[in-house]
Length: 201
Image (cartoon, rainbow, N blue to C red; front, side, top):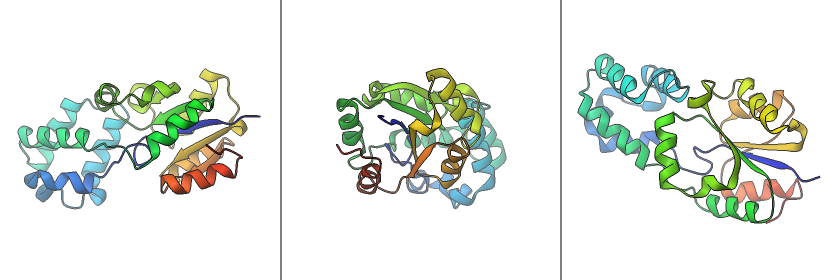
């Protein structure tokens, strides 16, 4: 039996470091502070990823509530999109898995606008047989419904799948349905973990 492999995007295939790129827009950095602990930002961004807020609505809400100009926040959004760079070795591994005949899928918490930007910027999306985007489905990980959606659409069994994500909450959500899981820390660590499933590329 050959496992089906399901990838997250942020901090698995592409870097996502808002605490770094926010410093390139000083006024936004000053207003939001530690972005990983800013409840306003995290709440609004979660809604953005879930497709409950458009990019225009996110910028408008942050502008009003954090007392920032729309222009400053638009600069921040550009920085956010362009900061998504390939994780070392990850895209090569993805290509190697595809070339070896593994069925690859993607489940990502991502807004529609970010997804459309990244589809035009990177070619790796072609490796996936199905891409599940939270902003399109209106469901975020770790809600088990997003995992069940992929299983239903592709006729898959969770026990035959390996789900890879950097966040423990998302790993726990997939585990509830019986997925095999790997929490991602680095491409080297992922390669080692895949060998436990007799996947060696």
